Amino acid sequence: MELTFIKILLIIGAGMAAGFINVLAGGGSLITLPVLIFLGLPSALANGTNRIALMVQSISAVTNFRNKGYFNYKLSIFLALPAILGSIIGSQLAISIPDKIFNLILAFVMIIMLILILWQPGKRFKQKEEEPWSNTKKFLSLVAFFFVGLYGGFIQGGVGIIIIVALSVVSGMSLVEINSMKAMVIGIYMFFSLLVFILNGQVNWLAGLLLAIGNSAGAWLGSSFAVEKGDKWIRVVLTVVIIVLAGRLLLITLI
Image: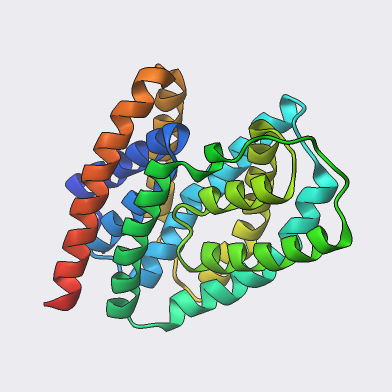
């Protein structure tokens, strides 16, 4: 893909939109990934390129939570181990399947994740007192996070919602603690997932860095935005954008 001035602006703009949305609602990759595909990148290359921005975002989030003292290294690493295995398998799968099949899956996943983002399942679980993790909970968590990594390696968009729901069910941690663990787990398995795409030559570094710049700027704008007003507004915009992008993906895939 030749990066013209217009394409550079579109990539940075998509990154800004994703960063902004990730702060207020989540699911920014559901915008950046199809945009990269529409700009001419094959699905696997778009998927790998998108992970450059995601890796930068994860490092920033982990650093921020660590500085604020919200961290559980042992449990985060424990949950990240099965996620690493899942992400490697998911990444290899994303690279190996044909573009049309991937785009079709992505379009349907976008709609499903949009429903989850609007429903906000993580907020529907009442916080309970935190209890020591039994062996049963540990086993179920290992299984759950293998599939978290599998999905994250394959598409990634909206995986944070899945992690929040999973940890809300099995633990009594606060949402802040859950988000800090989410950031570290994603950061760890994202490294290995990105490595799979790099080794297979499925990363456009320039586009990825431009996306990361836009993502960082969007996250800063989102964090500065009035959350109470912005949360309602951004969900309306996110709904329209995802429906349009998913519809176009289905159109170009099925025709």
